[in-house]
Length: 257
Ligand code: NAP
Image 1 (tube, rainbow, N blue to C red):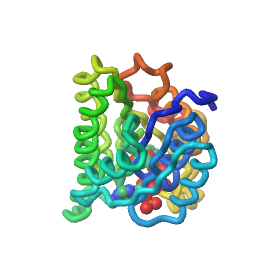
Image 2: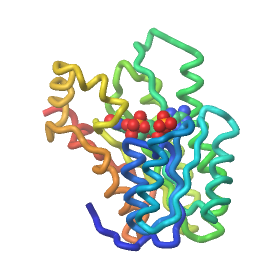
Image 3: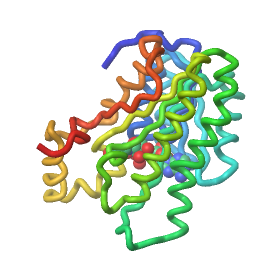
C-alpha cells in the first residue's frame, strides 16, 4: 500500500457505498491519508458505524450518512449533508451499485429502473451537482467505480455491464470539461474482488475454479487492492491523470490465458 501520510489533510471525501467491501477499504485509506470522510450506506448500518469509528481513530472527522440512491432525492441530500458536516466535498467516489443476476431474456422493469437509477442517474446527478464547487475551489477529484464487465460482459448481468459503460462514458465526458479547473475524473475498474456480493457465487467450487481460470494471476482481489490506485488519483501524484480507466483485476480484462 502506498503511504501518503497526511497527503490529503484538510480535504473532505464522500464515498457512496462505503459501509463495507471495496468502499470501506477505500474510505479507510483516505482517512489514513488525512482526509475527513463521509461513510455512506443504503440504510442505517452497524457496519457503517464500525467503519466510521475506524476512520475517526485516524484523527480525522468522520460522519455516517445513509440513503438509497434509487430514491431521487438522495444524491443531492447526500452532497448537502456531507458539505454541512465536513465543510465541502473535495473528493467524490461513486462506488455504490446495484446488480441482479438475470438471463437477458428475463426482463424485469422494476429491477431495471433500480439498476439504471443507482448506477447511472445517481452518478450523473452527483457529478453534475458537485462539479461547480470543485471548479470554484480549483481542486477536485471524482472517481467512478466501474467493472471488468465494461469490457468482458457477463451474460447474466447485461444491464449492469451497460450501466458501468455508461458511467465510464459520463466520467470521460465530464473530465474533458473540467480538466482546466484542477478537477480530475477517473474510473477504477475492479475484476473479481472478494466482497459480500460475491460470497454466494464463489462458494460453488466449480464456479470459483472456472472464474479463477479466467484471471491471468489466478487469484481474486481483496477490497484493499482497490485503495492504492484511489490514493494515487486523489493525491498530487495523480494531478495530471484524468479520463483514465484503471483496471484492478489481476489481468482479467486481458482475456483468459
Ligand atoms: P458490496 O460489498 O456489495 O457493498 C455495496 C455498498 O453499496 C454497500 O455499502 C451498500 O450499502 C451500498 N449500496 C448498495 N445498494 C445501494 C443503494 N441502492 N443505495 C445506496 N447504497 C447502496 O459491493 P462491492 O463488491 O464492494 O462493490 C463496490 C463497487 O465495486 C460496486 O460499484 C461494484 O459494482 C464494483 N465492482 C465490484 C466487484 C467485485 O468483485 N466485488 C467487481 C467489479 C466491480 P449497505 O451496506 O447499506 O447495503
